[in-house]
Amino acid sequence: MSTATAEKPAEAHVFEADVARLLHMMVHSVYSDKDVFLRELVSNAADACEKLRYEAISTPSLLAGDADTRILLTLDADNNQLIIEDNGIGMSRAELIEALGTIARSGTRAFMERIEASKASEGAQLIGQFGVGFYSSFMVAERVDVASRKAGEETAWLWSSDGKGSYSVSELDPADAPARGTRITLHLMEDVKDYTRRTKVERIVKQQSGHVPVPIKIADKAGEEPSQLTDGTALWTKSKSDVTKEEYTDFYRGVSGQYDDPALTVHFRAEGRHEYTTLAFVPSTQPFDLFDPDRKGRMKLYVKRIFITDDAELLPRYLRFVRGLVDTADLPLNVSREMIQESPILSAIRKGVTNRVLSAIEKQAKDDAEAYKTFWNNFGIVLKEGLYDDFERKSQLLGLARFRTTTSGENHRSLEDYVKDAKEEQKSIYYLTGSSLEQLQASPQLEGFKARGIEVLLLSDPVDSFWVMNAPEFEGKSFKSVSQGAADLAQFAKPDSAETEKTPEAKAEIASFVTLAKEQLREEVSDVVASDRLTESAVCLVASESGYDRQLEKILAGAGQLQTTSKPVLEINPDHALIKAISASGSNPALQQDAVHLLYDQARILDGDKPADPRAFAERMGRLFEKALKG
Ligand code: ADP
Image (tube, rainbow, N blue to C red):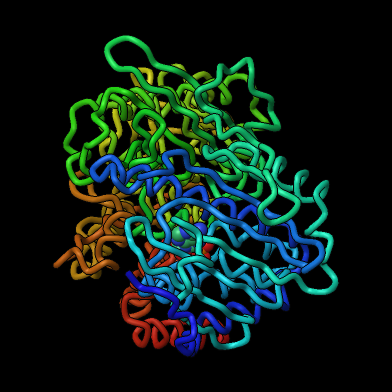
């Protein structure tokens, strides 16, 4: 047993460069809402208690002598100190250095970049999300001492720093250390002394941490008998009618590390074959890591109120914005974190929770279009991933999806709306994929559809190209790209046209133009056809009936996943003056050939591509200009 070795000189350490930068920022930019430091420290203390309870399942002796975990706040106005102590898992010397002196977490750099780019007021809101909570103590303290004794170990350690570039670590006299766990002493800065005022601290804790699942006690002086501030009752075990909106919001903030209000709260107890409770929230703003490819879900798994893991993937990836927890008594407490993924009980729970969350989203879509619009703007792009990879729920997700269309204006339309307003003879749901809404709106491929009053979905997210390929029918209608295969628009009447049957001469002229274009463009296109897809433009490109849609092909080629790309079909508008003029320019074959190639390049440009051969394009254009200008 180590005895009084506190005289051993403290070892000095220099903070990792990132930590130093972060601390500087913490003190100088993140000043708007200092209260958050307390929430972060209480949350760390609660995590430490939960970790201990988990470890104690396999090593009960860790709880020896002190089975009830708790968090104790001690106010010391005389010495200008606020002390946050827990009897949780504690930290060894190496852990102190690792956890409080280095930042290995990937979120940290992202955090700093966000802070530097954002308003100070946003800064405080970001702390919890990025897992840099401990350092927020330097917003209020000129010195922070962390005394810690790891559960089951004899030796205790003191970490100490003024947050200005270095910290020290020394062995602590066991008599001065907590019997188990961590005691954080904040030596408060002059201007924030009131964090030793009981009313203030009580109010902040109740407000911010009222529902951490570990009881919180408070004492006015060290050694004084503390009184209970919160009872540590797990909020999710209460019945829905006993929980207020404020309590849910507070709990949501704690569990998510976000400071917004939940847009949706899903709280239910499943009974029957499997018993579990879920408390899940849909945020009202996008979490910063929504598109981080490594980010797994953020749902916590509890077994009989003991925190087991936040890595159990309780919801599918396309619901990764949902925050919350599942608590079940059906899994054994000693289930290993590794085994959990395979558990059939867990997959049943996963399914149940997913259904409940989706029905809550569905209900909002039905009852509150305005709120749903915000939801869709935040998370629609993520939810659409499910259209691609959740085979069983494709139809349900299609019902939830919202789209910009040729008739939607600034609004979104549901497929239900689409089908309701479709033409009687319409068998398909038409769509066009592309890289931006602006590009889509200007696409010549849409002209024939617009002219006939047929609505087309405008799909501009990359994920759209993938799901739409294998989308199931929606209310009996299949999905059809307007830039692939024949447009079969002839079946729809064009309201404003006096379309007359073309004369045999006109038909022959079109046929000979098509032959000419095919001959000239045989390297570039697979076919040239006259179509009714166009009304204003002279030409456009479409993909052939079989194979990939053009946008998907571009995405795959861009990602290096395609060896060869297929040649598109060039569609021409036989009624267009330009086509007629080129067709009639046979007396000048060189000019006619230039014009045909330029037509093709024009179609490419309208598709968001470059001319096939920029140099040849420029030369042809030059020759044509010259001719036109010379008259
Ligand atoms: P986060 O809690 O998001 O990981 P923090 O900066 O708040 O980030 O804490 C860093 C790490 O320090 C924690 O992950 C934990 O390992 C350790 N830590 C902080 N406070 C405590 C505590 N009271 N007891 C045990 N470990 C702690």
